[in-house]
Image 1 (cartoon, rainbow, N blue to C red):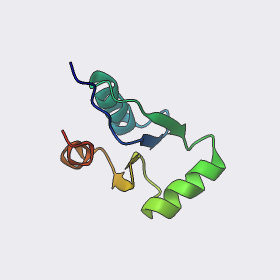
Image 2 (image 1 turned 135 degrees about the vertical axis):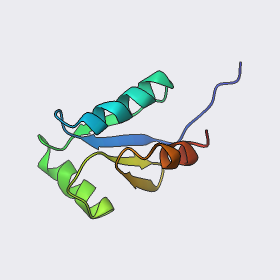
Image 3 (image 1 turned 60 degrees about the vertical axis):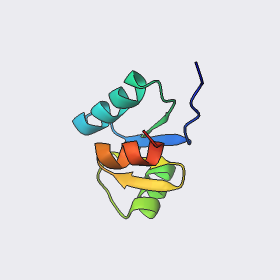
Image 4 (image 1 turned 180 degrees about the vertical axis):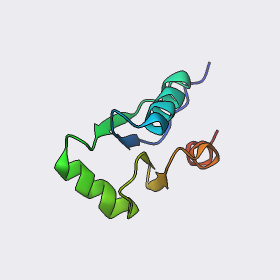
Length: 82
């Protein structure tokens, strides 16, 4: 079986966000490694998220160089090449 290498994935989230939970579940179910950043706790990361996305809402998902606002499954799959 060939191992698929995905681009780096970073999920900017908060603990109370249901769409953040769904996004992280999707990555776990598909065995895609990701970094979870709690922007409720980390001011620096929150500022980076806002700079990259222009958004205050979560989730903001960074896949490689692409920034996706919200749990937009078609965009996520396209960015991952699946």
